Amino acid sequence: MNLADLKNFVDRKWDVDLVPRLVDYVKVPAKSPAFDGSWAAHGHLQQVIKDAEAWCRAQSIEGMQIEIVAIEGRTPCLFFDVPATGGRGNDRTVLFYGHLDKQPEMTGWRDDLGPWKPVIEGDLLYGRGAADDGYAIYAALTVIAALDAQRVARPRCVGLIETCEESGSFDLPAYLDLLAPRLGDVALVAGLDSGCGNYEQLWVTTSLRGLVGGVLTVEVLAEGVHSGNASGIVPSSMRIARQLLNRIDDPATGRVLAPEFHADIPAERMQQVHAAAAILGDQVWKQFPWVGCNHGPDAHAHAMPTTTDPVEGILNRTWRPALSVTGAAGFPSIDSAGNVLRPKTSFKLSLRLPPTVDGERATRVLKQLLESDPPYNARVTFKEDFGATGWNAPPTAPWLARIADEASRFAFGRDAAWMGEGGTIPFMNMLGAKFPNAQFLTTGVLGPKSNAHGPNEFLHIAYAKKLTGAVARVVAAVPG
Image (tube, rainbow, N blue to C red; front, side, top):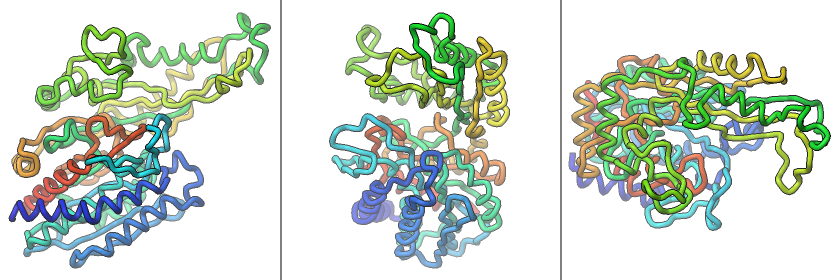
Protein backbone atom coordinates (compact mmCIF):
# COMPACT_ATOMS: atom_id res chain seq x y z
CA MET A 1 0.00 0.00 0.00
CA ASN A 2 1.29 3.42 -0.95
CA LEU A 3 0.33 5.45 2.10
CA ALA A 4 0.91 8.79 0.40
CA ASP A 5 -1.46 7.81 -2.40
CA LEU A 6 -3.98 6.62 0.17
CA LYS A 7 -3.87 9.97 1.93
CA ASN A 8 -4.18 11.90 -1.32
CA PHE A 9 -7.17 9.83 -2.44
CA VAL A 10 -8.99 10.33 0.87
CA ASP A 11 -8.24 14.06 1.08
CA ARG A 12 -9.38 14.66 -2.49
CA LYS A 13 -12.55 12.63 -1.99
CA TRP A 14 -13.45 14.63 1.12
CA ASP A 15 -12.76 18.00 -0.52
CA VAL A 16 -14.49 17.36 -3.83
CA ASP A 17 -17.31 15.03 -2.84
CA LEU A 18 -17.94 14.41 0.85
CA VAL A 19 -17.96 17.97 2.17
CA PRO A 20 -20.50 19.20 -0.44
CA ARG A 21 -22.63 16.11 0.25
CA LEU A 22 -22.61 16.76 3.98
CA VAL A 23 -23.45 20.43 3.44
CA ASP A 24 -26.65 19.29 1.73
CA TYR A 25 -27.29 16.73 4.48
CA VAL A 26 -27.11 19.35 7.24
CA LYS A 27 -29.94 21.29 5.57
CA VAL A 28 -32.47 18.47 6.10
CA PRO A 29 -34.24 18.43 9.50
CA ALA A 30 -34.12 14.64 9.67
CA LYS A 31 -35.01 14.41 13.34
CA SER A 32 -35.16 11.03 15.01
CA PRO A 33 -38.64 9.59 15.69
CA ALA A 34 -38.48 10.47 19.39
CA PHE A 35 -38.37 14.14 18.38
CA ASP A 36 -40.66 13.99 15.34
CA GLY A 37 -43.75 11.87 15.87
CA SER A 38 -44.81 12.57 12.27
CA TRP A 39 -41.48 11.55 10.73
CA ALA A 40 -43.15 9.31 8.15
CA ALA A 41 -45.42 12.11 6.92
CA HIS A 42 -42.66 14.72 6.92
CA GLY A 43 -40.37 12.49 4.86
CA HIS A 44 -37.06 13.90 6.08
CA LEU A 45 -35.64 10.56 7.19
CA GLN A 46 -36.64 9.07 3.87
CA GLN A 47 -34.97 11.95 2.06
CA VAL A 48 -31.56 11.61 3.75
CA ILE A 49 -31.49 7.84 3.30
CA LYS A 50 -32.50 8.11 -0.37
CA ASP A 51 -29.86 10.81 -0.91
CA ALA A 52 -27.26 8.54 0.67
CA GLU A 53 -28.36 5.60 -1.46
CA ALA A 54 -28.13 7.68 -4.65
CA TRP A 55 -24.63 8.84 -3.72
CA CYS A 56 -23.53 5.28 -2.97
CA ARG A 57 -24.82 4.02 -6.32
CA ALA A 58 -22.78 6.70 -8.07
CA GLN A 59 -19.52 5.38 -6.59
CA SER A 60 -17.27 3.22 -8.74
CA ILE A 61 -17.02 0.28 -6.33
CA GLU A 62 -17.01 -3.01 -8.21
CA GLY A 63 -19.63 -5.53 -7.21
CA MET A 64 -21.32 -3.34 -4.59
CA GLN A 65 -24.94 -4.11 -3.80
CA ILE A 66 -26.93 -1.48 -1.94
CA GLU A 67 -30.56 -1.19 -0.93
CA ILE A 68 -32.92 0.60 1.40
CA VAL A 69 -34.47 -1.98 3.71
CA ALA A 70 -37.81 -0.91 5.16
CA ILE A 71 -40.01 -2.90 7.52
CA GLU A 72 -43.59 -1.67 7.63
CA GLY A 73 -44.09 0.89 10.39
CA ARG A 74 -40.37 1.19 11.19
CA THR A 75 -37.72 3.72 10.28
CA PRO A 76 -35.72 2.63 7.21
CA CYS A 77 -32.15 1.31 7.06
CA LEU A 78 -29.51 1.42 4.34
CA PHE A 79 -27.60 -1.82 3.72
CA PHE A 80 -24.59 -2.32 1.47
CA ASP A 81 -22.53 -5.38 0.60
CA VAL A 82 -19.16 -5.19 -1.19
CA PRO A 83 -17.33 -8.43 -2.07
CA ALA A 84 -13.78 -9.11 -0.94
CA THR A 85 -10.82 -8.40 -3.22
CA GLY A 86 -7.35 -9.82 -3.81
CA GLY A 87 -8.44 -13.43 -3.49
CA ARG A 88 -9.83 -12.99 0.03
CA GLY A 89 -12.86 -15.13 0.88
CA ASN A 90 -16.31 -13.63 1.40
CA ASP A 91 -17.21 -15.48 4.60
CA ARG A 92 -15.46 -13.13 7.05
CA THR A 93 -16.61 -9.53 6.94
CA VAL A 94 -16.03 -6.03 8.18
CA LEU A 95 -19.30 -4.46 9.31
CA PHE A 96 -19.58 -0.67 9.11
CA TYR A 97 -22.19 1.02 11.30
CA GLY A 98 -23.62 4.54 11.32
CA HIS A 99 -26.89 6.45 11.41
CA LEU A 100 -28.58 9.30 9.54
CA ASP A 101 -31.21 10.50 12.03
CA LYS A 102 -30.52 13.64 14.05
CA GLN A 103 -31.11 15.24 17.42
CA PRO A 104 -33.58 18.18 17.60
CA GLU A 105 -32.66 21.84 17.09
CA MET A 106 -31.67 22.93 20.63
CA THR A 107 -31.40 26.60 21.57
CA GLY A 108 -28.28 28.71 22.02
CA TRP A 109 -26.79 28.66 18.51
CA ARG A 110 -24.57 31.56 17.52
CA ASP A 111 -26.52 34.24 15.68
CA ASP A 112 -24.88 33.34 12.37
CA LEU A 113 -25.36 29.58 12.81
CA GLY A 114 -28.29 27.20 13.05
CA PRO A 115 -29.04 23.48 13.13
CA TRP A 116 -30.11 23.28 9.49
CA LYS A 117 -27.76 26.01 8.23
CA PRO A 118 -24.41 24.57 7.08
CA VAL A 119 -21.52 26.96 7.62
CA ILE A 120 -17.86 26.16 6.93
CA GLU A 121 -15.26 28.05 8.94
CA GLY A 122 -11.75 26.81 8.24
CA ASP A 123 -11.77 23.08 9.01
CA LEU A 124 -15.12 23.13 10.79
CA LEU A 125 -18.51 22.36 9.22
CA TYR A 126 -21.21 23.68 11.55
CA GLY A 127 -24.74 22.27 11.61
CA ARG A 128 -26.72 19.40 13.03
CA GLY A 129 -25.77 15.84 12.22
CA ALA A 130 -22.72 15.87 9.94
CA ALA A 131 -20.49 14.60 12.74
CA ASP A 132 -23.26 12.69 14.53
CA ASP A 133 -23.44 10.70 12.36
CA GLY A 134 -24.09 11.70 8.75
CA TYR A 135 -20.46 11.36 7.68
CA ALA A 136 -20.30 7.63 8.52
CA ILE A 137 -21.81 6.15 5.35
CA TYR A 138 -19.75 8.45 3.14
CA ALA A 139 -16.51 7.78 5.03
CA ALA A 140 -17.15 4.02 4.98
CA LEU A 141 -17.41 3.83 1.20
CA THR A 142 -14.44 6.17 0.86
CA VAL A 143 -12.41 3.67 2.92
CA ILE A 144 -13.40 0.88 0.52
CA ALA A 145 -12.81 2.99 -2.61
CA ALA A 146 -9.39 4.14 -1.37
CA LEU A 147 -8.22 0.56 -0.86
CA ASP A 148 -9.66 -0.60 -4.17
CA ALA A 149 -7.98 2.27 -6.02
CA GLN A 150 -4.64 0.73 -5.04
CA ARG A 151 -5.83 -2.86 -5.55
CA VAL A 152 -5.12 -3.63 -1.91
CA ALA A 153 -6.60 -6.94 -0.82
CA ARG A 154 -9.34 -6.45 1.72
CA PRO A 155 -12.18 -8.43 3.33
CA ARG A 156 -15.79 -8.35 2.26
CA CYS A 157 -17.40 -5.20 3.66
CA VAL A 158 -21.03 -4.80 4.67
CA GLY A 159 -22.74 -1.78 6.15
CA LEU A 160 -25.84 -1.06 8.21
CA ILE A 161 -26.92 2.58 8.46
CA GLU A 162 -30.02 3.16 10.57
CA THR A 163 -32.36 6.12 11.15
CA CYS A 164 -33.44 5.49 14.74
CA GLU A 165 -30.22 5.71 16.77
CA GLU A 166 -30.96 9.02 18.47
CA SER A 167 -34.21 7.48 19.74
CA GLY A 168 -32.45 4.51 21.30
CA SER A 169 -32.39 2.30 18.17
CA PHE A 170 -35.72 0.71 19.08
CA ASP A 171 -36.24 -0.33 15.44
CA LEU A 172 -32.77 -1.82 15.05
CA PRO A 173 -33.27 -5.29 16.59
CA ALA A 174 -35.83 -6.13 13.92
CA TYR A 175 -33.39 -5.15 11.16
CA LEU A 176 -30.51 -6.94 12.83
CA ASP A 177 -32.57 -10.14 12.96
CA LEU A 178 -33.64 -9.67 9.33
CA LEU A 179 -30.15 -8.93 8.00
CA ALA A 180 -28.01 -11.14 10.26
CA PRO A 181 -27.84 -14.01 7.73
CA ARG A 182 -26.41 -11.56 5.17
CA LEU A 183 -23.75 -10.08 7.44
CA GLY A 184 -21.41 -13.06 7.31
CA ASP A 185 -18.89 -13.97 9.99
CA VAL A 186 -18.16 -10.50 11.34
CA ALA A 187 -14.45 -10.22 12.12
CA LEU A 188 -14.43 -6.47 12.76
CA VAL A 189 -17.10 -3.92 13.53
CA ALA A 190 -16.13 -0.44 12.37
CA GLY A 191 -18.52 1.78 14.32
CA LEU A 192 -18.06 5.41 13.25
CA ASP A 193 -20.46 7.07 15.70
CA SER A 194 -18.23 7.67 18.70
CA GLY A 195 -15.85 10.33 19.96
CA CYS A 196 -12.21 11.34 20.21
CA GLY A 197 -10.35 12.79 23.15
CA ASN A 198 -8.43 15.22 20.94
CA TYR A 199 -7.84 15.81 17.25
CA GLU A 200 -4.26 14.59 17.33
CA GLN A 201 -4.51 10.78 17.17
CA LEU A 202 -6.82 7.84 16.56
CA TRP A 203 -9.11 7.20 19.52
CA VAL A 204 -10.64 3.75 19.95
CA THR A 205 -13.72 3.54 22.16
CA THR A 206 -13.52 0.72 24.69
CA SER A 207 -16.93 1.12 26.31
CA LEU A 208 -20.18 3.05 26.11
CA ARG A 209 -22.60 3.88 28.88
CA GLY A 210 -26.19 2.68 28.97
CA LEU A 211 -29.20 4.93 29.34
CA VAL A 212 -32.60 5.05 31.02
CA GLY A 213 -34.87 7.77 29.68
CA GLY A 214 -38.36 8.75 30.69
CA VAL A 215 -40.73 11.40 32.02
CA LEU A 216 -41.41 11.96 35.72
CA THR A 217 -44.76 13.65 36.42
CA VAL A 218 -45.99 14.89 39.80
CA GLU A 219 -49.67 15.90 40.04
CA VAL A 220 -51.23 17.57 43.09
CA LEU A 221 -54.24 19.52 41.80
CA ALA A 222 -56.80 19.15 39.04
CA GLU A 223 -56.17 22.76 38.03
CA GLY A 224 -54.01 25.73 39.02
CA VAL A 225 -55.09 27.82 42.00
CA HIS A 226 -54.24 31.23 43.48
CA SER A 227 -50.85 30.88 45.15
CA GLY A 228 -51.71 33.33 47.90
CA ASN A 229 -54.79 31.35 48.83
CA ALA A 230 -53.28 27.85 48.55
CA SER A 231 -49.56 27.98 49.25
CA GLY A 232 -48.76 26.66 52.68
CA ILE A 233 -51.66 24.25 52.47
CA VAL A 234 -51.24 22.73 49.00
CA PRO A 235 -47.73 21.30 48.57
CA SER A 236 -45.81 22.49 45.53
CA SER A 237 -45.53 19.87 42.81
CA MET A 238 -42.06 21.26 42.11
CA ARG A 239 -40.96 20.65 45.70
CA ILE A 240 -42.25 17.10 45.58
CA ALA A 241 -40.44 16.48 42.29
CA ARG A 242 -37.28 17.84 43.88
CA GLN A 243 -37.63 15.42 46.80
CA LEU A 244 -38.10 12.51 44.39
CA LEU A 245 -35.00 13.41 42.40
CA ASN A 246 -33.05 13.51 45.67
CA ARG A 247 -33.79 9.79 45.98
CA ILE A 248 -31.73 9.24 42.84
CA ASP A 249 -28.68 11.44 43.34
CA ASP A 250 -27.03 13.56 45.99
CA PRO A 251 -27.99 17.18 45.20
CA ALA A 252 -24.69 18.45 46.60
CA THR A 253 -22.35 16.17 44.62
CA GLY A 254 -24.45 14.58 41.86
CA ARG A 255 -23.40 11.10 42.98
CA VAL A 256 -26.08 8.55 42.07
CA LEU A 257 -27.13 6.79 45.27
CA ALA A 258 -28.65 3.38 44.54
CA PRO A 259 -26.04 0.61 44.27
CA GLU A 260 -28.05 -1.02 41.47
CA PHE A 261 -26.91 1.78 39.15
CA HIS A 262 -23.19 1.22 39.81
CA ALA A 263 -20.72 -1.37 38.46
CA ASP A 264 -17.20 -2.57 39.16
CA ILE A 265 -14.62 -1.03 36.84
CA PRO A 266 -12.38 -3.63 35.13
CA ALA A 267 -8.63 -3.35 35.73
CA GLU A 268 -7.90 -3.02 31.99
CA ARG A 269 -10.25 -0.07 31.75
CA MET A 270 -8.60 1.60 34.74
CA GLN A 271 -5.22 1.28 33.03
CA GLN A 272 -6.63 2.83 29.87
CA VAL A 273 -8.23 5.66 31.86
CA HIS A 274 -4.90 6.55 33.45
CA ALA A 275 -3.20 6.52 30.04
CA ALA A 276 -5.91 8.72 28.49
CA ALA A 277 -5.79 11.11 31.45
CA ALA A 278 -2.04 11.50 30.98
CA ILE A 279 -2.66 12.48 27.33
CA LEU A 280 -5.58 14.84 27.91
CA GLY A 281 -4.86 16.41 31.29
CA ASP A 282 -7.12 19.39 32.03
CA GLN A 283 -8.63 19.12 28.54
CA VAL A 284 -10.95 16.50 30.08
CA TRP A 285 -12.93 19.31 31.68
CA LYS A 286 -11.74 22.45 29.88
CA GLN A 287 -13.28 21.26 26.60
CA PHE A 288 -16.76 22.34 27.69
CA PRO A 289 -18.23 25.85 27.17
CA TRP A 290 -18.17 27.03 30.78
CA VAL A 291 -19.63 30.35 31.84
CA GLY A 292 -16.65 32.68 31.99
CA CYS A 293 -13.32 32.30 30.23
CA ASN A 294 -10.81 31.69 33.03
CA HIS A 295 -10.46 28.33 34.74
CA GLY A 296 -8.36 27.34 37.68
CA PRO A 297 -8.55 26.81 41.41
CA ASP A 298 -8.78 30.57 42.04
CA ALA A 299 -11.37 31.34 39.36
CA HIS A 300 -14.23 31.55 41.86
CA ALA A 301 -16.25 33.87 39.64
CA HIS A 302 -16.58 31.21 36.97
CA ALA A 303 -18.43 27.90 36.76
CA MET A 304 -16.28 24.94 37.75
CA PRO A 305 -16.48 21.19 37.11
CA THR A 306 -17.34 18.53 39.67
CA THR A 307 -13.66 17.52 39.58
CA THR A 308 -10.49 18.82 37.96
CA ASP A 309 -8.73 15.46 38.35
CA PRO A 310 -8.56 14.06 34.79
CA VAL A 311 -8.72 10.44 35.98
CA GLU A 312 -11.82 11.08 38.06
CA GLY A 313 -13.32 13.15 35.25
CA ILE A 314 -12.93 10.34 32.71
CA LEU A 315 -14.33 7.78 35.16
CA ASN A 316 -17.30 10.06 35.90
CA ARG A 317 -18.24 10.28 32.23
CA THR A 318 -17.54 6.67 31.24
CA TRP A 319 -17.98 4.22 34.14
CA ARG A 320 -20.18 5.99 36.67
CA PRO A 321 -23.92 6.74 36.54
CA ALA A 322 -25.19 10.30 36.23
CA LEU A 323 -28.67 11.84 36.26
CA SER A 324 -29.66 14.80 34.07
CA VAL A 325 -32.94 16.67 33.64
CA THR A 326 -33.11 17.40 29.93
CA GLY A 327 -36.60 18.88 29.63
CA ALA A 328 -39.57 20.14 31.61
CA ALA A 329 -43.31 20.73 31.19
CA GLY A 330 -46.03 22.33 33.26
CA PHE A 331 -44.21 25.67 33.50
CA PRO A 332 -45.60 28.82 31.88
CA SER A 333 -43.10 31.14 30.24
CA ILE A 334 -41.71 33.77 32.60
CA ASP A 335 -43.58 36.62 30.92
CA SER A 336 -46.92 34.83 31.43
CA ALA A 337 -46.29 33.33 34.88
CA GLY A 338 -48.89 34.71 37.29
CA ASN A 339 -49.34 34.08 41.01
CA VAL A 340 -50.62 30.57 40.45
CA LEU A 341 -49.76 27.33 42.20
CA ARG A 342 -49.24 24.98 39.27
CA PRO A 343 -51.18 21.69 39.33
CA LYS A 344 -48.33 19.48 38.11
CA THR A 345 -44.66 19.33 37.15
CA SER A 346 -43.03 17.06 34.57
CA PHE A 347 -39.33 16.43 34.00
CA LYS A 348 -37.63 14.53 31.18
CA LEU A 349 -34.96 12.42 32.86
CA SER A 350 -31.80 10.95 31.40
CA LEU A 351 -29.91 8.51 33.62
CA ARG A 352 -26.59 7.37 32.16
CA LEU A 353 -25.49 3.93 33.32
CA PRO A 354 -22.10 2.19 33.57
CA PRO A 355 -21.45 -0.05 30.54
CA THR A 356 -22.18 -3.35 32.31
CA VAL A 357 -25.42 -2.39 34.11
CA ASP A 358 -28.53 -3.99 32.61
CA GLY A 359 -30.74 -1.26 31.15
CA GLU A 360 -34.08 -3.01 31.67
CA ARG A 361 -33.36 -3.77 35.32
CA ALA A 362 -32.17 -0.22 35.89
CA THR A 363 -35.42 1.06 34.40
CA ARG A 364 -37.47 -1.00 36.86
CA VAL A 365 -35.36 0.20 39.80
CA LEU A 366 -35.67 3.84 38.75
CA LYS A 367 -39.42 3.57 38.34
CA GLN A 368 -39.82 1.96 41.77
CA LEU A 369 -37.65 4.58 43.48
CA LEU A 370 -39.61 7.45 41.96
CA GLU A 371 -43.15 6.12 42.30
CA SER A 372 -43.10 4.39 45.70
CA ASP A 373 -44.44 6.14 48.81
CA PRO A 374 -44.99 9.55 47.15
CA PRO A 375 -44.80 12.62 49.45
CA TYR A 376 -48.22 14.02 50.39
CA ASN A 377 -49.77 11.09 48.50
CA ALA A 378 -49.28 13.02 45.27
CA ARG A 379 -49.95 11.25 41.98
CA VAL A 380 -46.47 10.32 40.75
CA THR A 381 -45.74 8.50 37.51
CA PHE A 382 -42.55 7.67 35.68
CA LYS A 383 -43.22 6.80 32.05
CA GLU A 384 -40.08 5.20 30.68
CA ASP A 385 -39.01 5.77 27.07
CA PHE A 386 -36.42 3.01 26.93
CA GLY A 387 -33.73 1.27 28.91
CA ALA A 388 -30.58 0.68 26.88
CA THR A 389 -27.75 -1.47 28.18
CA GLY A 390 -24.28 -0.10 27.56
CA TRP A 391 -21.35 -1.89 25.98
CA ASN A 392 -17.92 -3.05 27.09
CA ALA A 393 -15.57 -4.15 24.31
CA PRO A 394 -14.16 -7.68 24.34
CA PRO A 395 -10.42 -8.12 25.00
CA THR A 396 -8.46 -6.48 22.20
CA ALA A 397 -6.80 -8.93 19.81
CA PRO A 398 -3.04 -8.38 19.43
CA TRP A 399 -3.40 -7.71 15.68
CA LEU A 400 -5.90 -4.90 16.31
CA ALA A 401 -3.80 -3.30 19.04
CA ARG A 402 -0.78 -3.35 16.74
CA ILE A 403 -2.51 -2.07 13.61
CA ALA A 404 -4.40 0.65 15.50
CA ASP A 405 -1.06 2.13 16.55
CA GLU A 406 0.31 1.79 13.03
CA ALA A 407 -2.78 3.41 11.52
CA SER A 408 -2.68 6.26 14.00
CA ARG A 409 1.01 6.89 13.36
CA PHE A 410 0.32 6.89 9.61
CA ALA A 411 -2.54 9.38 9.86
CA PHE A 412 -1.50 11.51 12.84
CA GLY A 413 2.09 10.73 13.74
CA ARG A 414 1.10 9.45 17.19
CA ASP A 415 0.04 6.12 18.69
CA ALA A 416 -3.65 5.33 19.13
CA ALA A 417 -5.38 6.02 22.45
CA TRP A 418 -8.09 3.89 24.07
CA MET A 419 -10.89 5.29 26.22
CA GLY A 420 -14.53 4.75 27.10
CA GLU A 421 -17.20 7.23 26.02
CA GLY A 422 -20.15 8.54 27.96
CA GLY A 423 -22.72 8.25 25.18
CA THR A 424 -24.92 5.31 24.26
CA ILE A 425 -24.94 3.32 21.02
CA PRO A 426 -27.40 0.44 21.60
CA PHE A 427 -26.28 -1.24 18.39
CA MET A 428 -22.88 -2.09 19.89
CA ASN A 429 -24.37 -4.15 22.70
CA MET A 430 -26.78 -5.84 20.28
CA LEU A 431 -23.98 -6.71 17.89
CA GLY A 432 -21.64 -7.85 20.63
CA ALA A 433 -24.27 -10.37 21.72
CA LYS A 434 -24.93 -11.59 18.15
CA PHE A 435 -21.25 -11.78 17.09
CA PRO A 436 -19.27 -12.56 20.26
CA ASN A 437 -16.05 -13.27 18.35
CA ALA A 438 -15.92 -9.92 16.55
CA GLN A 439 -13.35 -7.25 17.27
CA PHE A 440 -14.47 -3.63 17.50
CA LEU A 441 -12.97 -0.49 16.02
CA THR A 442 -15.44 1.93 17.56
CA THR A 443 -14.31 5.45 16.81
CA GLY A 444 -15.57 8.81 15.61
CA VAL A 445 -15.06 12.53 15.15
CA LEU A 446 -16.88 13.94 18.17
CA GLY A 447 -13.97 15.66 19.87
CA PRO A 448 -13.50 18.73 22.08
CA LYS A 449 -16.11 21.46 21.61
CA SER A 450 -17.83 19.59 18.73
CA ASN A 451 -20.94 19.72 20.96
CA ALA A 452 -23.01 16.88 19.54
CA HIS A 453 -26.72 17.27 20.44
CA GLY A 454 -26.15 20.89 21.48
CA PRO A 455 -25.85 24.29 19.80
CA ASN A 456 -22.95 25.05 17.44
CA GLU A 457 -22.30 21.37 16.68
CA PHE A 458 -19.51 20.89 14.17
CA LEU A 459 -17.61 18.32 12.13
CA HIS A 460 -13.83 18.70 12.24
CA ILE A 461 -13.11 18.10 8.54
CA ALA A 462 -9.32 17.75 8.83
CA TYR A 463 -9.70 15.16 11.58
CA ALA A 464 -12.38 13.29 9.62
CA LYS A 465 -9.99 12.99 6.67
CA LYS A 466 -7.23 11.54 8.82
CA LEU A 467 -9.64 9.21 10.60
CA THR A 468 -10.88 7.89 7.25
CA GLY A 469 -7.32 7.07 6.24
CA ALA A 470 -6.61 5.39 9.57
CA VAL A 471 -9.73 3.22 9.30
CA ALA A 472 -8.69 2.18 5.78
CA ARG A 473 -5.32 1.07 7.15
CA VAL A 474 -7.07 -1.07 9.81
CA VAL A 475 -9.56 -2.61 7.39
CA ALA A 476 -6.77 -3.72 5.08
CA ALA A 477 -5.11 -5.55 7.96
CA VAL A 478 -8.10 -7.63 9.11
CA PRO A 479 -6.88 -11.26 9.17
CA GLY A 480 -8.50 -14.17 7.43
